[in-house]
Length: 494
Image (cartoon, rainbow, N blue to C red):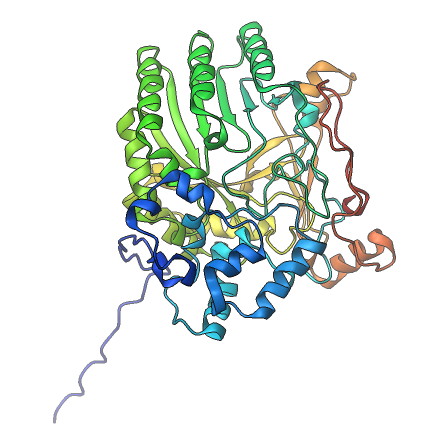
């Protein structure tokens, strides 16, 4: 009697399957407005800047009839009602959207609307949450950075680190920008704050403070985006920074490595980076570049080339600080695909993913703390340890905390609580006698992610079920030079 064949056992699949994918530069000539653009033009930083898309008319000139009228209507409605950032899209970033789609208007428009890079770089009205576009606790300066200025533009939240904002503009504007109150030009919703001092005077004050404060060893040089600081001015500031014996780490923040890699590939820029890096090496100062990629589609060969060129010029690392956003990268697969492309194909070290900050009209992007905790757990064990990013919550009045560091969590109302082991600048400057180190600082999940009881609680708090409005009336448009003066939060975002 024949024995039955034993059943064939299929090995269980891993939750995530790694497949190496070689980055590609999408063919920009698929877009009607760029059919005649040469390779040399595409690689030219000035051509990229001159052909940035700033409005619907310029987008239509590029996309032609590939985008339907309904898309442009959605874009106009968002700019009129919700947008906290102006439109500024370099060709490099626009070209990554809907890259592999037939040239048929409805199919292209559908793919364009679904594109993860489009969702945060070019938001439309339908993206925003219809019931909760803003959290009731949202604020323009959600991290209260201006309260922590020691001089204009120099934020000191941590005992040994500062953030130096040299400029309030970027080569590209992200819809979720945490500094939406200062960076970029005004929108119908937001009259932007502004820096008062001239750049040279501001930098002098920063350097003078650092000379007098040897406890600060780590300087993040940012903005805005350093790609918008004229190189001679930036190099001069960095060389003077390197004269300070107390400064041991310098981090240069530029999303343009991803959004406009052509800038960092210019020979005169790379020559300057080499001069700064050589001095940093002689001084044994760690010089790194931090950039901002949120989806694997942004990691193209030109991005990899720019990162490699910066490393060859002498910077210690090129690192990525992304933002965790629903509809963009808030799945284990999206995060791991991005991190493998960054680390394995572009020489960019995955570093942080921040929870999207509580700025006005950002609720459709934000994730809850418990979702971020699950994501952190889900990506462990796949990447090398040194290239496994930390998911962090930037808690107002506190600072960065790993998502598992919450000391309390009311899941029904979406309120997590966090503590710190240092005093921020306002607490040092104006001590109250209260033990701030024992204080629990709250952070708030998006209301639409809460159970029904939690949503009702917030609706009652917001005004008996009244719909929280968009960004609301503008606050003052000047960041006061005095470091203790904070900006006013717009009423609709309180």
